[in-house]
Image (tube, rainbow, N blue to C red; front, side, top):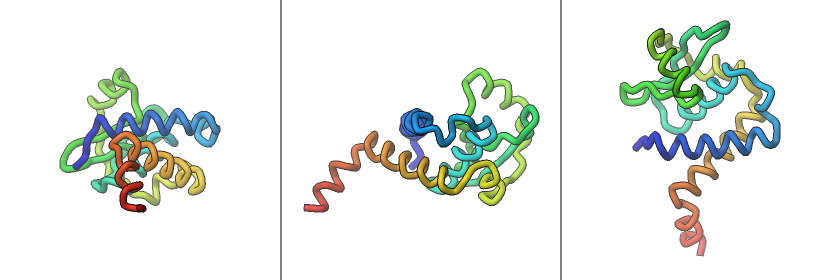
Length: 129
């Protein structure tokens, strides 16, 4: 089950950790939307979509018929939603915007934050005993 609030909280926590180490801090918004849409696709499935935004592509997801976009502010999101083109994209295309090493670091941090938020760490400790 996809819980938007939990995913948003884990992404916010992960992104703030990642900016502290600098791997994505100097990247553009298309990098951020590419990384996040790839992460959502890898973990939760669905499809990756894109729309021309300003001078580059903006990536987002489609899960169970619902657009999922965690990389825009609420103000920009409402402006962009009026002009979404929903062009189908794929992982190969989003990978052009970030290095595999940066992505894997971000991915592992997200998993850790997600587990912490939903309380999975306490269950994994019990199973290890």
